[in-house]
Length: 384
Image 1 (cartoon, rainbow, N blue to C red):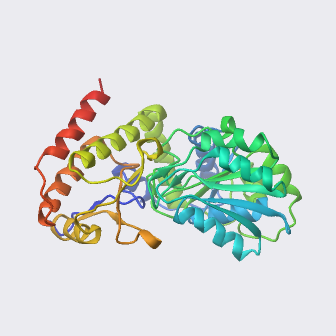
Image 2: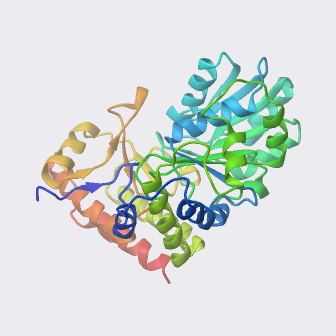
């Protein structure tokens, strides 16, 4: 193992493309000068296709969680009730944010490892017509589940006027997203996952319906006030000091997306998901999620005959490969492989090869090369 060599395959932060690293090292400029205005002006239209919206996407110099808090504090009026659909640790985070603002929230829990059923959300809203906002998670990072956000809007609209706010932090940029078409009112993502940047930027867009409510909302907020970001963005500016180095990197990320083509980006992520899942199956290790619920950006694996944490230590100590463990009650029960952003099928083959050797070290009897061969077959079929 080389001292400076690290293979980071967790579901965020994800590796940074070299051209993006170079872009972020540019000489600093004044954040209120013409150069900064031109930078923001060039970025604005290129974010819209990633979100699948005609609305402007606000850029906040803060973490992805700040975007989730913005979604709450800007859309929920004092005294209103909301529904949080919890499919894992990050759905649970929405409840913690609501609790911090003394918002009366309803919690709809779904078994970890499973996607929510839009019809069950619909039925819940029929029983609770007082609910004004539904909060849901697109990709639940803690379990590797991709929830059916594409069907949520139709289900909610059929029985309620509630707004729909979605955490897309661990998949937007790696999974096809159609905010406008799907009827999402607020969509949030962060910089450090499929967007191929370091942590430090949150992105958030709101529908016309959401803006009407945001405008009339008396809930106190300052740094997280979406109206400030919208009004400044119209002048190619930000209300507070932007993280300009990350903006430089973002411009290059958007160039890379355009160069590859968004549809190819999404296809690549789906291919990596299928390669990873088939390799794990071939090695005889259970997956946490069903194929129909699986995210293209992260795969969760639930071993039965070896310890997840022991394997993670071998991967890190012998090969400098870092994968993620479980969260909350799944700590020690699962491990998670991130395959998002600056990641390719070649990286997946490397991950599986290292995983096979580490499984042998962990005492699991496997046939070396079986997982790699399964992933190779998926690749050959996927690129025909």
